[in-house]
Every structure is written in structure tokens, then in C-alpha cells.
Amino acid sequence: MDTELSAFDVLEIAERIERNGAKFYRRAAGLMDDADLSTLFINLAQWEMRHVEIFRQMKERLSDSRWDKGELTPLRIDSRASSVMAGLAVFGMHPDPREELDARRTKADMLRMAVGKETDSIVYYLGLKDFVSNAADKQVIDEVIAEEKKHVRILMQSLEHAA
Picture 1 (spheres, rainbow, N blue to C red):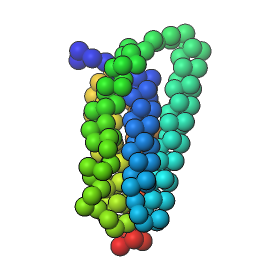
Picture 2 (cartoon, rainbow, N blue to C red; picture 1 turned 135 degrees about the vertical axis):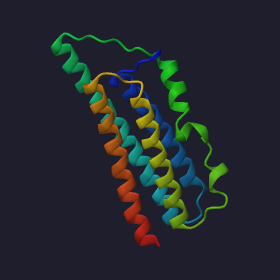
Picture 3 (tube, rainbow, N blue to C red; picture 1 turned 90 degrees about the horizontal axis):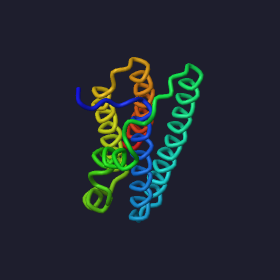
Picture 4 (cartoon, rainbow, N blue to C red; picture 1 turned 180 degrees about the horizontal axis):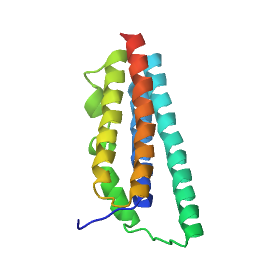
């Protein structure tokens, strides 16, 4: 494997993805004429920003743990590289929600789109795991994936009520 990532690297990328997602959802909220749909997107943006904080805390715990063990592993990718990698994820590919929202007007359509984006994020993180060799670091990525799965479950429950 030519490129190897640490959990810290993946969490750095994950924070950027979540910021991109929050930005996307805030823009989408502003495009909605329907107050319920606008609120849905505002809530999604808030979820994404909570994830930023969760991932920041995970990085902090990881750093503290490695410091205590004497494992001072520096970042292997720089800030620009993590930004590029985050741009390859679901929210980086279509940063302008207008491209995706024109034909979608019902709450169920919006929820399906959000489920798709969250599911695509899970797939992206699963792919990043292939670049991580340390078992403990893979566990951290599994925690990131678990957070994304929570969003999918909540969105699916909302979709059931909307349909």
C-alpha cells in the first residue's frame, strides 16, 4: 500500500466532509419555499456540525492516548491533502444544492436524497479504511461510520412518517 492513513488523518477528513455537508444543507434550506423542508435541512446542517465536534473530540482523545503511550504519530497528510480527499466525498462532488434540488419538492424526496448522501458517506469511509493498517485506527473509523448510520436510521424513520 503506497499511501497509509491514520485514524487522526481520517478524522481530519471526516471533519471537513461534515463541514461541507452542513454548508450544503444550509444552502438547501435557503432554497426551500416549504417551511417543513427548510427546517429539515437546517436540522441536517446542525447534525453535521455536531459530528464535527464529535470527530474533533475523537481526535483529541486519540492524541491524548497516543501521547500517554509515547506514540507521537504526526499527521501523515497535510491540511491541503485532507481538503482534497474530503472534496472527493459526497458533499464535495456537488457542493451546490441547486443542482440536485430542482426536481425534488416533496419532503419524502428530500429525505431520500439525504439518506443517499449519508449512505454514500458511509461507503466513502469504508473505502478509507482500506488505507488504514492499524487495527485501533480502523476501530476509530468504525465509530465514524456508526455516527453516519445513526443519521440514516433517523432519516429512514422520518421517511416512513412522511410517506
